[in-house]
Image (cartoon, rainbow over the protein chains, first blue to last red):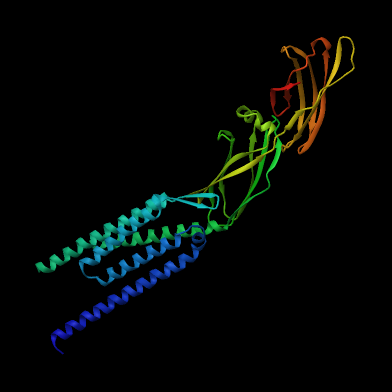
Length: 149
Length: 259
C-alpha cells in the first residue's frame, strides 16, 4: 500500500468518526427535544405557532451542530460553534418577542413574562460564544506553536 | 487555556440543562393548576353598597408553589368610567394545596348615578374587566385578562305616574291620589320611600306627600301617593317633583309634568 493510499484511508476513517459523532449528537439532541416536546404539548395546543417555532430552532441547531462536528479539528469548527451560540441568542430574542409573550385565546388575553428566563438564556449564549472565541484562539495558538517547532 | 474552556463548557451545559428542565417543568405543571370560579352572589354591605362576591377555588397540583396570585376586577360604565375596582391577593399557594377565596367587589349605586340616571330607569350592561395574575413557580409572571359584560337591571324600570284622581272634596282642600308603578329589575330588593311635590302651572308648590315602597327583586310595584291639595292652588297643568330615598341611593328631583 502506497503512502498516498494510507493517507486517504486515514482521512476517510477520521471523517467517518466525525460523521458518526455528529450523527450520535444529532440523534441525542433530537431525542431530548422529542421528550421535552411531550411535556410542552399542552402549550402547543394553546399557543399557535409554538410547535413550529421550537421545530425551526431544533432543526437549525442540529444542522449547525452537525456541520460543527464535521469540521472538527479545523478553525471552522469554532466558527460554527460561535454561530450556533449567536443563533440561539438572536432566535430567542425574536421568537420570544423580547421576553413578553402575548397570546389571545378566545376572549382571554394571556401575557407570559419570561424576561428573566430570556436574560439567563442570553447570558448563557454569550458565555457559549465567549467559549467558542477562546477555543478558536487556543486552536490558533496551538497551531502557531506546532509551526514554530 | 484548556482548563478554563473546559470549566466554561461544564458550567454552561449545567446551567442550560437546569434552565430548560426548570422552564419546561414549570410550564408543564401549570396544566395541573385548576381555577374554579363559583356562582357570583349579590348582597348588601352594612354601609348599603351592592356587594358582588365571587368564590374562587385554586387547586395547585403542580410541582411548584404559585406566587402572587392576584385577581383584580374593574367595573366600568357605558362611557368607560371606572365605577369600582377591587383586588384579592394571595402571596403563596403551596403545591398540593387547595385554597378557597372570595373575591368581593362593592358597587356604590350613588357613584353609578353620578354619571347617568339611566341606570335607575333603564336596563343596560356594565363593562367588566377581569385580570388574574400569578407567578408560576414563584418566578414566571403570567397574566390573563378578559372583558365581560354584566347585565344591569334598573330598580325603577318603567317608572310611571298614573292619572291623578281627586277625591274627598271640601271647600278648601281635596285629596289627590297619584298612582305609582315600576318594575324592580335589579338584583337587590328595593325598600325606602318616594317623596312627591306637586307644583301648579305658576310653579308654586301646591302640596307634598310621601309613601314607603317595598319592591323585592324582579317584581312589579304598584302604589300611590296621597296629597292634600288646596282647591285654590289647582291648575289644569303643572308638574311633579319626585324624590327617591332608599338606603342604597338617593335620587331626585325627577320632574314629571301632568296635564
